[in-house]
Every structure is written in C-alpha cells, then in structure tokens.
Length: 284
Ligand code: GRG
Image 1 (cartoon, rainbow, N blue to C red):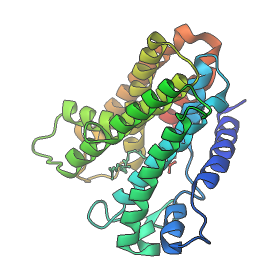
Image 2 (image 1 turned 180 degrees about the vertical axis):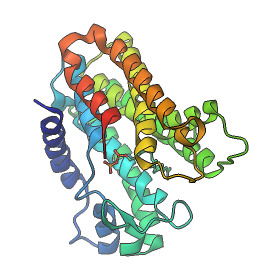
Image 3 (image 1 turned 90 degrees about the horizontal axis):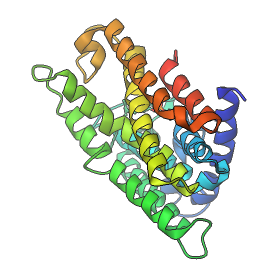
Image 4 (image 1 turned 120 degrees about the vertical axis):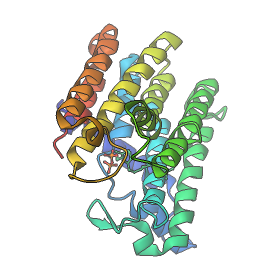
C-alpha cells in the first residue's frame, strides 16, 4: 500500500470512531457541538492517527488496537489548532480553506469547543482503560499519561508559550529545536508510542520508537517551515535562522536518524518509515 492509501485507510478508521465519540449537532448545546465538529470534519491529513496505527504495526500488532490513541491524539491536535487560530494567538480567519472555528461560531464558543475536545481526548483513553474496555488497563493508562504530558506545559502548551514569546534578537538554533520538539514532535511521539503501547510493545521498543518519532517530528516541522517560508517573516523558524538549504539538510539528517532507529523493527515498521518519509518530504 502506498502512503496515500495508508493515510486514507487510517482516516476512514479514525473518522468513524471520532464521529461516534463526538456529541451530535442535534443535541443541545448545538452551537458548542457544531463548533467541536467544525474543524474535525472534514479534517486534515490525519497524520497522527496514522502514526498511532503504524506504531501498533511496528510492534507486530493489528493497527485497530491503537484506535483509542488515534482518536485521542487527533482530538488534541484539533483543539490545539482551534485555540492557535484565536485572535489572542495567531489570529487566523481561515484554516484548510474554511472559516476558522471562532469566525464561524464566535470566540467564546471556539474556546469552549477546544476545551471540550481536549477533555474528550482523555475521556476516550480513560474509557479504553476501564476493566471492561478493549485494552489492558495499565497500558491504556500509561498511554494516557504520556499523552497528557505531551499536551501539557512541558510540551505542547509550553512550546506554544515560548513560540508566542519569540524574540528574534535572542533566538538561536537550540531554542528553535526546543520549540519544535515540544510544540510538534512530542505529539508525534505520543501517537507512535501510544499506538505501540496499546499494541503490547516492550519498553525497549517504545524507547526506540519515541526517539525515532521525535527525530522525524522535528524534521516534519522544519519541512513545514520550509514550505511556509516567506521572505522577511519574523517567526520561530530554522529557515530564517540558517537558510533554506541548511534547514533542508537538517531535516534530512533527522529523517535519516529516525530511519536508522527503525531498522531493527524490520518490515513491521514499513508503514512508519513510509509516513516519516512522507511527513518530511511533503511538497505542500
Ligand atoms: C494552542 C496549546 C496550543 C498549541 C498550538 C498547533 C499549534 C500549537 C500551532 C499551530 C501552528 C503550528 C506550526 C503547529 C505545529 C504543528 C503543525 C505543523 C501542525 C499542522 O499539522 P498537520 O500538517 O495539519 O498535520 P493537518 O491540517 O493535516 O491536520
């Protein structure tokens, strides 16, 4: 299967589960429920769910066992985009060619929709951890803890805080790398490792997968900055700091590092390798 086929199959699987998890728009408060669904359907590439499924496959499990993690990470990713678009943050009117949630539903509802998506992510994993749930409870709890850490002050939120504080006079490569790691790569790692955890992976495998996902997660963010590069923009980007060619070379080196870490997994990590190459090699 090629990467587009893998992403489409992952999206189908994740979308059906997400649709079931989300409150119906027919149920009050309708505005809130509509706002929660607005950016989720239709979604983006659904890369993080695909990474969760590929993480399970990398440890020899069926991709479906990663479903609770796949759903939870996409909910967190979506909440972060809803909040990132708000006037107090990036102040964007459009995302994926459609009005952002606060444009469509108002600012207060967009804040609440983001809050509710975040809470639903943890409810989803906690339900998977219930004794009668589909997953071994301790594994689901460990995935929940790792995802909470990736979403919190130490990672996603902390990275966003530093990004908002961006000061071009003080920025250096280590600082940019730290923001990329926390804001982008941590959620990639929680997706892959969470999927592998639910798939029964041992600590050695999880640790190698975490390092690989962090490496290609940072490479993905660098590649994203290369795609977004607009001369003269003042933002936290390796491109503005070291130039396009050096940034591309850094992304390639990180991808190579990730692929080397995946080597011991053999054919089981084929899907993960394909997604890592896709994430870093995207042209749009
Ligand atoms: C508000 C806590 C909080 C965090 C916001 C998501 C975010 C952090 C900022 C948005 C801008 C940005 C550069 C995010 C880094 C991650 C990234 C490149 C997100 C886009 O991911 P894709 O390409 O998006 O997977 P789709 O649309 O395909 O889902």
